[in-house]
Image (cartoon, rainbow, N blue to C red; front, side):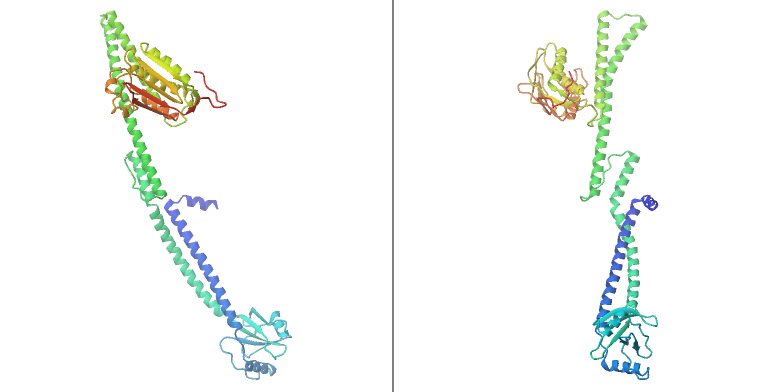
Length: 472
């Protein structure tokens, strides 16, 4: 059984579908033909038996037949209309048939009728000449212990059934051929959308052209598959565009510090080669510039590594984290980076979330660094955490309303911030980390000037039972 199944699986889908359809239709036609043959035969046999039961032999014919039997066949017996055979059966088992007729051997049920034990009998028997007969035996009133047996050949029915059989075989053959043609048509019609989809996939694989779209018709499974393919190619195209933009933006951002670093290193190298010393103050400024540019490069590379990680869930280990403790650590770093600023955190309530500890701390540091960077000297940064919502408000120049939709884009920097250190990736990392933890983040203009950043993370004021909260 496994070999035919294995061979059928090697056939193309169109051939298998056509074969399956043809087989199903052919089996249905054959089953209907067989049922029709048996139903017709049963109906004809019922009518045949009813006709045979309704046949009554005239008394004068029975008298003639009895006289012929008594005289040894010397008395004349009138012919019986049609193809009937009439016999006289005695209780002793003897049978008398008209001269020239092929006798049918009596059966026990016929003898029971002759003895008066049964009203009549109906059965199938074979005549002396081999013809299959349908026999009806009954008693005539006043005849004594004898019965009249009327037999009729079943060849009439068998001939009709044989003709019907050949007709049904022909119809089944035509049906099988028609089923094959219908199956092929159904396969071609049903798989035409699949052919279009296959062609589109092969085209994408061959040319890497992700702009291909398949027309969607209807709401069936093929339409759903086409929509899914279109959505997939659109997502791939968008991902490739983002990747290209990321590479281009990263190259642009790396070029500036690298160019400046190269210039400074060349000045130092030229001083060593020519023996012309650089003044101490200029040398210290040059080395400080090199150190700052290296720090900027390291920060940019770290941000790029963070953004290169897949967005899929499960890429990092999620733990129960005390958000208020992470915030306290981030506040210490923010105060070190802006010692001239006042960073307040008067309203901080405990809140536990499920996130990646290191990524979450980096996101909070980025938000606070952003506030520190844009705060004026001697300004104040106000921080609050209540009910899972963290707000950071600065009193800087703020962000123009038309720039707010772009603040979380990679490498995007407002015109006022392009002269300040940074890569434009900090808020992108914040948005990515918050979304991975199931939260929301946004920047809005604060009342009275400045910018207000808020982060909302799902969690609870107490850690879940049995959870282990890592030390910050």
